[in-house]
Amino acid sequence: MTANNPIGIKDFVETLIPQKKPFVMVDTLYSYSETELVSGFTIQDDAVFFKDDSFVESGIIEHMAQSVALHTGYQFYLRNEQAPTGYIGSINKLEIKVLPKLYDEIRTTVTVIQEFGGVTLVDIVSKLNNVEIAKGQMKTVLAK
Image (cartoon, rainbow, N blue to C red; front, side):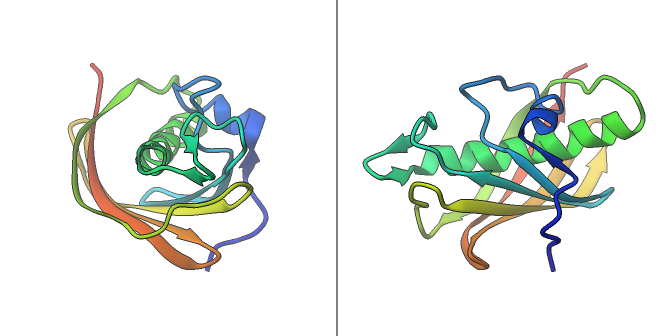
């Protein structure tokens, strides 16, 4: 069950990820633990990946990646350290079922499967109104 009281909203969340406006695809941090994070993103008409009345596949993938970056960024924030930049190493088992519409809020759960030497493997599930719309696995690598 995901809390509806966010830990952080737009301005704070943007300080935790390397992406900057207009390329920010997360605006809410709902919950955090060392092995899991729940993020949110409400689709606005000025979103980079909003086309033909939908938030397109590449936007969902970028939202998923930024949710992983948010997990790392918040982890470093809690330690009062500057978060390093990370890169997507691979995306596997990606399935996108539904494209969100204007003002829909995507809620994404990132679950850490394995973390070793700056490489993190995560499961990612994105939902719209508690219905799964996308899922996959992502491997990220921190820059040295």
